[in-house]
Image: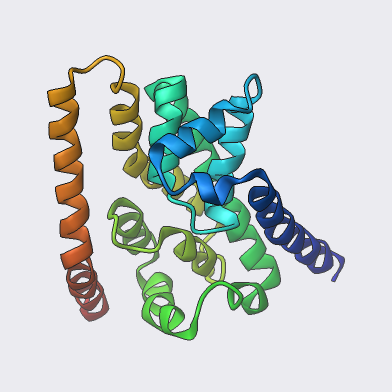
Length: 224
């Protein structure tokens, strides 16, 4: 009982405190553009690395923050690999934190973030296909990764196994953003333009066909 109470207090503190802190710092206004995000992180120098890590952590547990934009801005400031290390570490920590809170608090916690439609779509597949589905969902950009971490906490998957899945699959989707941001100062403008066009093309394809690909994958997993 005490464990559940402390978990509930932690969840409330993270959600309320994190959201208020981000709002008062001007983060949500800055997150609308890459330049705004870069300036926001840079103004906290010499603690910019810590602030960047906390922002990336908040993107998992507090609000729908565009992690790709923040990773790109971080790479411009810190370089590719430092940005990737900080982003990946924050993502793994945040994933395990919401997983643990969901496991401890159960449906009462998960229901605050996940609607019945999302639960009905994914929970049964996670329970039956578990490792395979989570690995595919974390690798493909059209699945709601953060929500799936919460739903995974409602299943019987062991925390250590979930941790391995997260480490092996979740961080790599952000690597491209970190590479692009880290190369922004070294590559000629025409190369950056081509990379930007390629990224935009991938985004449009995911936006247009992501739901279709997601349904096809879910139907295939449900049949097997």
